[in-house]
Length: 161
Image (cartoon, helix red, strand yellow):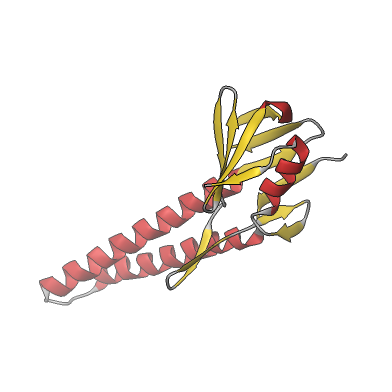
């Protein structure tokens, strides 16, 4: 078999776009506070606080985007490689003893610990939260495909809790 790479889907790119938009808005609000000749102290403090909150939201979105794009799962013939930033973890399929589905994540129970596979991000609309899927060798696929393919490769059924 050839290598199969699972990376976060293109929808994660929206986090980056959102962080840039929020940062620009916070900069505009912050600059307006210093340019303003408004004598109203309450309004100036409120505008400054809004700019600080906007900058914080932008920083959080940027950090989430940076983290989610560093994780990659590479499926080889006989082992799984988890590439995350500066570290890489290799797990042989034979070492996976159990796979447990817990909501949107799947826990791989190994002889010497466990690994959690979770969606790289979510899209929330109202009270509905949908996991973002993966890009599998250039094709966008749903989140569930990675655990299903991993289950088939290591010959362990996914249990539900």
